[in-house]
Image 1: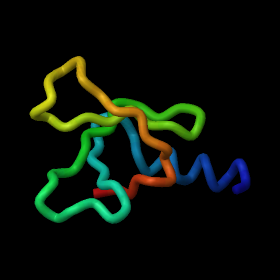
Image 2: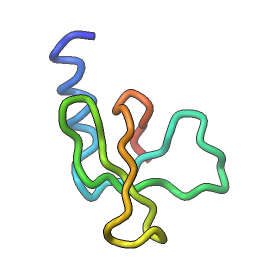
Image 3: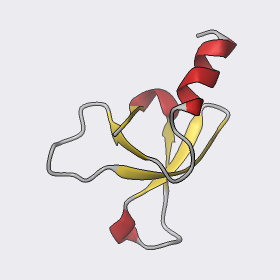
Image 4: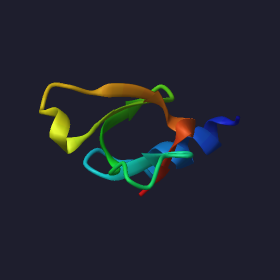
Length: 64
């Protein structure tokens, strides 16, 4: 994947936005994006609390 393509993907997932995993079940709410850096994004569910997050490859996410 080219560097420009990575930049385009990361620009679509700014902090505070919401994203879904590819193939995410419909009954699971979108994840809130904390930040993205180096091809990885920190995301969380609002019900998880402020300090619980999950690190996901950005290519597994799509804008909600």
